Amino acid sequence: MKNVNQLLAQAQKLQKNVNDAQDKIKDKEVTGIASNGAVTISLTVNGTMESIIIDKKIIDPNDTEMLEDLIITAFNDAKAKADAIYEQAMKTATGGMQLPGLF
Image (cartoon, rainbow, N blue to C red):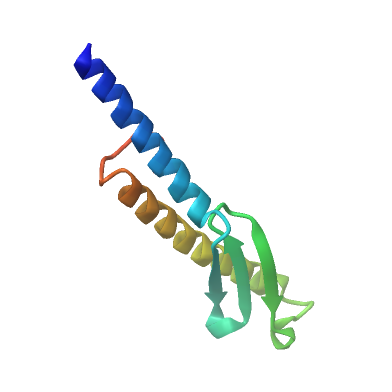
């Protein structure tokens, strides 16, 4: 029974570490940039878009596809940065253990 209690205590500590790490980074913002700043998007690590800035010089009503591509590029850049921060926080919180569904 001692081993089960130790295992349960370790699992509870691990859960607390994960929860603490998630709370610590949830509002952290990352910025994604496309075309040298023509489009800039800020996201929280949780994926909430906080802002989007589009340089007016690149807005061409006859070429909306280019603007759409730049928005996607900036978003994907920000999302990759957010994912990296989350993954690193979870690795730290779990001591490097790979837990299914966590990251």
